[in-house]
Length: 552
Image (cartoon, rainbow, N blue to C red; front, side, top):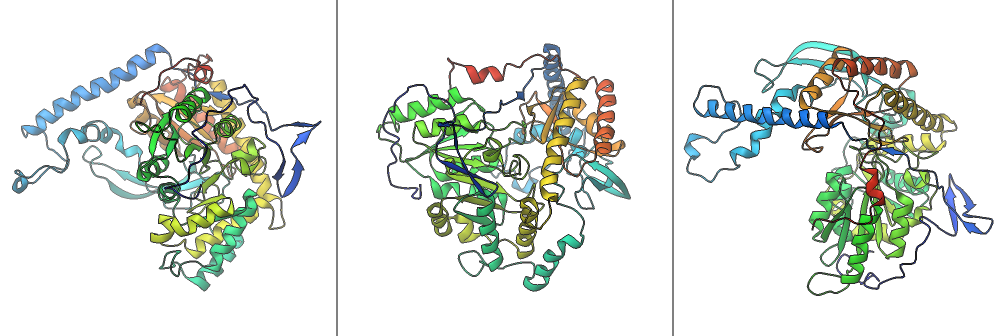
């Protein structure tokens, strides 16, 4: 899988459709640096723990009022646009200058309608500036608006010790300076801040090589390559792996970086329903049987794109089933572990370890250092020939500046901490504390009657709010209680599924979580957010579908 243009991979042959056990594997698997036999009693096995996920549907009246809320907001938006066009109401949005009235407009007026009339009403809940390290507690700069959120001014007041439930600081390693960070300070003094070159030129340092060797060891793979930006790790490397004549099968909830990388590659893209094995297998089967459109030639490559933990849904990829399908139809698998590396698995090694699988079952392992490691950048790991190919052909390696040396040292320090190479067990204790906090927080929210999405082991916890008015009230009331949360709405989510997204951290104490839960309990009663009827959602039924239609 090292040539985006040529080399037919046996995806054109129809393979035996005999039913097989999902996720079976043979050979040895390596975990925590120890090679263990992957067979017991002569039978191959993997960690067949049940996947417990929840996607409960909202009551009908909630959906009706949600759509009514957006409808009323849209009607008032048209009214306000009419008043603005006649000069009755001041227009604060960007408009074309009078001198350019005969030019082709840069954008259509309606393209800005949602931002102008709906988003602006609750804009104060986003882009809040903080002025401290994003630890379990952080400081927020207070701001107010005098023109209904079109502009803001700072009051000069700092809201101290706000409980942070919004940052991806899963292991609490993004923190204020202490003596454990001395090595980062030493590297800063020795190397400076920037590299001022690309990896292809003079931007490969000994620190980069040390980090890449450590990442490969951490993931139990042959080799790894690191990049200075997590988003670019996906968007700039996928085009180097596949191209015209290749097929990408992408989960419908994949991150924008995966979507952009797939589009830039020039490959044909087809979407399968989220974590739906029947949907994926239908696409794989059709790809193998029918090949490329018009010519009917076999696809040069078939690449499956998935994430480890989905950041908006809190769900975990059904890896054993996907690996089984990948092997059955001779496809390749690319998994983005941005949110799962460091945060799931017994020792924080991601979803591959979470399911007890062999890293060699995944051709391309991708992850970022921006979440669990308290730094920035990303990596791609796997077989040595794959990594060597990317060293030459990666757009990020050729055109982007190399990772900053202090950042590389921070990642090295964090990874050694997690692996126990610092001589302590504190890293493993944090991984276990994160899992404990996650289960506790999710269990309490369920007991209170909220609808929450995702896997019970996922530290990303979406709480469904639905109505746009409640999204704003929820975030504002919690900030008044010194609790910082992230609220998310359309277009980042479906129109009727606005939510708050909590990120649990190992740095959160039980007292902090109880404080948040108490406030959420009161807020749920005040805003009537406890929609759960403990009824199974229609979404998991997709996993058992036998008949369905797919959009082209």
